[in-house]
Length: 107
Image 1 (spheres, rainbow, N blue to C red):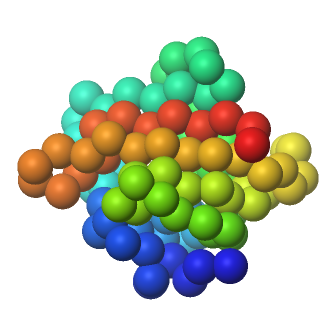
Image 2: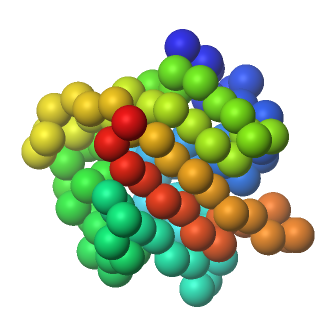
């Protein structure tokens, strides 16, 4: 496993730390105001998805691998709704160091 503090990309590192801490303010700060996301290939409402999959269900990311300069992760993701699953995450970042889009799929 890779400790979140060892992740290469600072925006992705902030995202993972916010998810693992259940810190909604830090999560929102890691994203651009117009950030988008998809889950298993379908675009979702980011705020609703984050509430359901992260905050109200105690989401947590254990990082298995990173690639593409830290913008691609394989994660053991768990929450109180679905249990644990192996997932792949891809991130797009902006010049100001925030995430403009993320995509997650089962790996």
